[in-house]
Length: 306
Image (tube, rainbow, N blue to C red; front, side):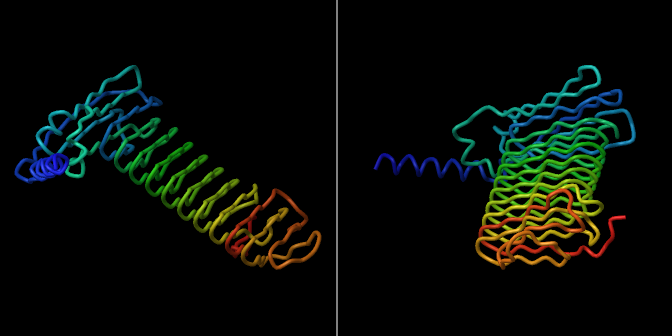
């Protein structure tokens, strides 16, 4: 009986905290003048993050915080400069009661940086978008989607519970999620794309590719010369598209479906429905395509590499 009364009290408090009439907000604005080549270090306990490259030499930090009076009061934002670098922090004290009303709280970080600037941004509970910068990009979220677009430089992004999208990057890409899809396109550089519970799509890439998932499909489309492809899944199909004139060694196999290759292969060993090993156009970097529970197809991408 005592436990039931406590639960009723908790539920009542949660309802009160969720009332729109108790919602409030506050804003944080700060601007820094920096030299090019510095780094934005942003870390927050909660909230979404958007970082955009601009045309000036300023780092402009804007934060909007909305929710219950206690949330808005307790959520502290600080920002400071050290040389060419800018640091931004969003901090929230641990609170027993806040767990019942966290869905009614929000913080939005919007930061504009110089066009040539490095980014390191992480949040414990929201989406992250980084776009239009030239520099090294690192991003992470524990509970949302993450995206990096229009970047000149290496990109490393990850999330524990959402989707990952990387688009139009001139540099190496490392994209990873524990519970969603990974979509990478328009990359001039090597790509690593992995998920534990979704699909992986790597499209229009010039570079080596490593793509894997434990529970979905893998699609890889490589433009330009073959620099090596490793595509693997435990529970779906694997499809790899390359130019008809690429040179490659091929190792394609499945434990639960069929293997097809639209490009002529000089086969090594026995011909089986479930595996193909051989060379394409005399051999070259390895194209490895394996699945435990689906089909494998190597197809002609209908373009020449030269």
